Structures are given as C-alpha cells and as structure tokens.
Image (cartoon, rainbow, N blue to C red; front, side, top):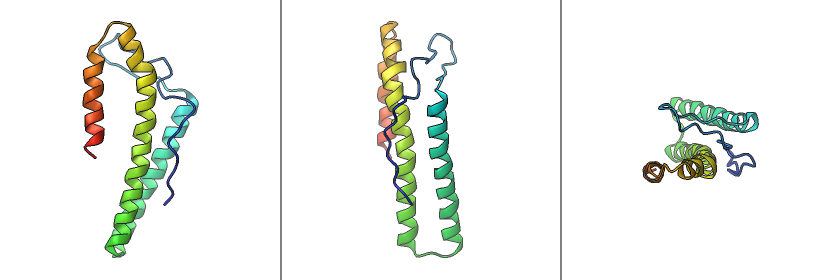
Length: 115
C-alpha cells in the first residue's frame, strides 16, 4: 500500500472556523474536502484489504505491514487537519481573545501522540 505525502496547499479551515456559536464547525474549501475525502476513501479501502487478508489467513507480518501503512495514511489526514486548524481556527480564536483554545489544542495533540 502506498504512502502518500501529507502536504496540502489548501489548509482545511481556511479562516472560516466558527467559534462564536456553541457548535463550532470548520468550513473546508472544496479542494481540501476533496483531498481529505480521497485520502479517507483510500484508508477505507486499505481497511477492507486488511480484512480480506485476515479472511485469507495471510501471514501475520504481511497483515501488520498493511496495518502500519493504513495507520500512516490516517495520520497524514490528521496532520493536514491539524495544520489547517493551527493556521486558521486557533489563530482566529486567539485573536478574538479566546485563549482556552491553547488548552484544547494541547489536549488534541496529546490524543494524536498516544498513537
């Protein structure tokens, strides 16, 4: 399974993260959404492939290799989202005087690093 680069010319949030309402949302550009969905569709296919390998009693090391590739692909999606979040959502909220976003960000980074 391929390892795809995580760099993205269009950060996901693109200065449209709504932090005023109680339900925050990110408004991704169409290019960013398309990129993320394409990557997630690949991950979904990789998961189905792993399931097939298990069903076919494929050698354990080969299955583990495919699991690692799938985790790397999913991590690249998270990196793209995190980059856009930092560059827009977090910056906007700090500029608005909402410094609680820093604690939220630290919690998010801790969750990502547990993997």
